[in-house]
Image 1 (cartoon, helix red, strand yellow):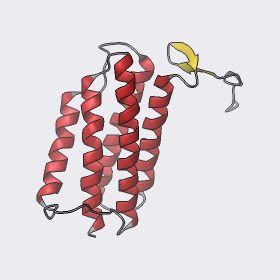
Image 2: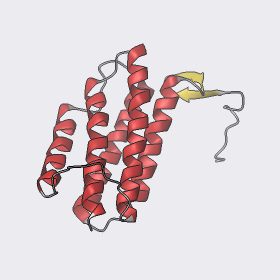
Image 3: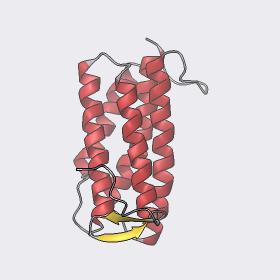
Image 4: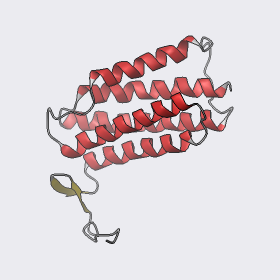
Length: 165
């Protein structure tokens, strides 16, 4: 089987149940989510803590499910849930307890891990902006919107942890 199909040569692609333009907003959102997932995979190469690696794998899977929601485009067939948001919040809170109180803006640049986690944060913010734009055109899963908003906070907090190591 060849990797190329030639079906997209003139600007169309598949969104699970229908053909759309490659510049369709749903395709843009999924492209941005894909960039977040790819950045997570690079960040993982700089991290040794198995618990953190497991968390990053779980986050990757949740984002993958979020992208599936967008591609499926079926209201109420959601894959991201309130417990995913709560889990992320709990992780942020646990990490934050062990970190110094923030008193100024900081750069996450002291280690490769913190730099890549910062890149994941930035990519997440970009994905969030286009997800919000898509939500203005059609109602999306509010748990996905909450998760992506918390996720940038998670990456910032995890980046702070690795900035000090």
